[in-house]
Image 1 (cartoon, one colour):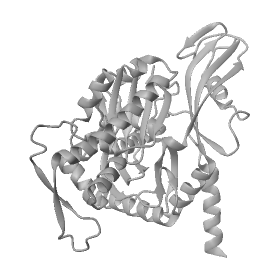
Image 2 (cartoon, one colour):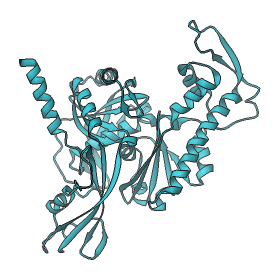
Image 3 (cartoon, rainbow, N blue to C red):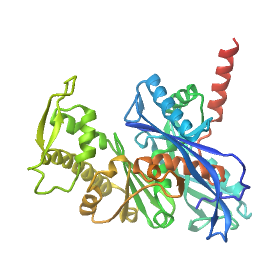
Length: 429
């Protein structure tokens, strides 16, 4: 649990919006603040979110997390946002935005503060966390998250919550996540042209954990494997903290590309074949069952040929096995506590491939489950889709931000102020 949780009155707001900008899709979700009874808190009313609108759009103008066409990306964002607003029958003015894990960097920093024998309070903690190692982080990177891993008070190590304790020197081990300044500026400008403010930026790896993990998993150690379109992200959590992030430059899109190349069919048809017939569990009947494959380059689509289903399954298996082998290599080379690799949660759109969980269990010989969003209400068929996990995590992050349960979030105030001044000058001169 975060050290800065505070009880605040529930206001009448309150809409939260999330914008997940991926390499294959842009997803916008709008949620409404509600109250729910908590048995753990003695029946007290606690804030929760109900999803009231979701919009999807094919992602354009972005590749492997990097922006390659601002206008195309702006069109994708606008279409996704408008679809979500129409479904929710509400207009939004700000969004929490995901950042690709492949472009973020982790920094483990040590900071300390003299407290002079006074009882430690939240003011001390905030001062400690504000010492975020500017001499270590280069000027071309922007701090996104400052996550405290553990505290030390004088000679006492491993303190989870030092508030109220008395000592002379308080130190902390911090997990600082940064992103390129250029990426932040370009995304902020693009989203600004969509007439939206950025409420905060969130690492997609962190968001997936917030969305899919339960409290015991966060505490005991777990790794979330998010298989996206262009990459696979591994986010490891221990004792409630994000402790490690790793990425693999292969994802579900790699499987689709292999099918398109191997069978000589358009990418749209390759995706369709993967969805309809894709499996990692072969059977003896696969080579006797034929499937129709439309030929690449045929305008009218009438020309097609037949292939054994086993050929398609072989193509899919080959690429998925490569991804799983790279995951194993990442685990073997990792320097974090091995307890984070005792259990795994697989999420992301490509996690729905039939037999993926079983194949992962065979390879890793660990506990594996499929991860979907927890803690949200609304349209269940959308919320329970693993491709929604990052968007759900952004909404959870926004709720924590609202209840005062966030630390070290990126402040977008200066950039938004500059954008508003620029728009005012254009309109008036």
